[in-house]
Structures are given as C-alpha cells and as structure tokens.
Amino acid sequence: MSAEKVIILGAASAMAEALARIYAAEGASLVLVGRRPERLEEMAADLCVRGATVEIAPADLDQADGAAERLSAWSGGAPIAAVHLFYGVLTDQTRAEADLGYAQATLTTNFTSAALWSLAAANLLEAQRRGVLVVVGSVAGDRGRQSNYVYGAAKAGLGALVQGIAHRLALRGGAAHAVLVKPGFVDTPMTDHLPKGGPLWASPEAVARRIRKAADGKAPVVYAPAFWQLIMLVIRLLPAPIFHRRPL
Image 1 (spheres, helix red, strand yellow):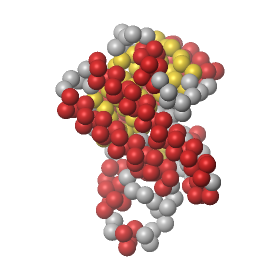
Image 2 (cartoon, one colour):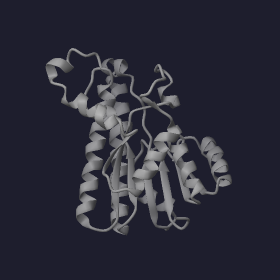
Image 3 (cartoon, helix red, strand yellow):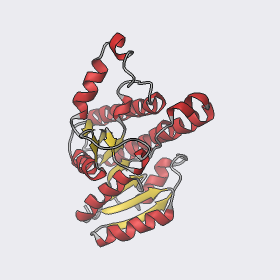
C-alpha cells in the first residue's frame, strides 16, 4: 500500500478526514486535496502520527482544467490505489429556486466539476489497469423531492455518471473499478443547520468504515449505512399520487 497513492479530493470534509485516519492506520501514502492549506497541514500532521505518509495539494476543485495532469502530478509517478471524491456543497433549496446564479454555482460544484474529476480519474485508472474511484453521492439523488431537488439533481447526475464509469471499466478488463457511495444523514458541519439525532443519523466514522470496505469490494453502488437502500427503495416505489401528498 505504501508505494501506491490514495488521493482524497475534498479531504477536509468530516467523512474524508475519518477515512484518511483509517488509511493512516494501514500505513497508506495519502495526498490530501482541498481549498484550505492550513487545514490540510493540520490534518497531515495528525495523519503522519497515525502512520501515514502525507502530501498536501491545495486546490480549488471547482476548477477542473487539466484534471488528469494534476492527478498524475499529485501521484508523483506512483501507481494510484484509489481516488476518493468527497467535495460538494449542501444546496439551500429555497435560495436556489429564487437565485439562478446561486443554483448554477452549486450545480457546478456538485455535478459539473465532480464529473470532470471522475472522468479524469477513470482514465488514469483504466490506463494502469487497477485502482478504484470512489465517489460520494447522496440518497438525495434517488428521487426528486421538493425539499432538496436541486442538490438531488446534481447527485443523481453524478451517480449516473459514476455507474456508467463502473460499467465501462468492468467491460474493459483489468482490475480498475468505480464505486458510488450514497450516504444518508451524516452528523457533519455541513448538516449543522438540520435537527439531528435518532436512528437515521450516522457518524462520519461509521460512514468512512463503509466507504473503506466499499473501496476493496466490487459492488458498484453502496448505501451508507446499508439500511438506506431499503428506505430509498420504498421512496422510489411510492406512486406519484401518494408521493405528491407527502412533504418529503
């Protein structure tokens, strides 16, 4: 593992940091990518103590120009074991409906740029014939709901793209593969404006353990925690006349 690189895009998120600590315990060689260099430095110091080799790469991931070249540079010529994509913003639905400029900005972050980084990573992994792309989507993408459909639309589009990448890589042979992870409610700073508590909420650490397992598995879509697969199946199957009477 130490000779290969694990690149984490959006490394400063709570789930990404929890995952990085799991990799650190394995002695992984990590590349932390994110907007805030001071935060990445703090994480790097902690992860080195935990057993990792760490490099930081400050970057605005909304800017996906030269994504493949940048990923290659961050790997330093070493094989890439995994590319994990975490970054995104939780869209204010009411504001997005009224402010189309804001809606466009969040769609760019949550779909357009994320899709381009995913495609670039897939190309590199296919070329080396191994490694995994793990993209964090959301259960919000499973069915459009009035409470978060702009965010959900971006996650739905990204999910379809990652599933297509997984299909493509499976048909090309080799050991490269892709995984879409769909978390439900996670107790992170991004969800601090929501009422928390109860069985539907998961910790970043619990979701990170699920993500780490998914990276080594072969399932192209993984819900985190697993019970969200059943919940979202029920929501998807609700007939429209019933669904449209529920303020979900």
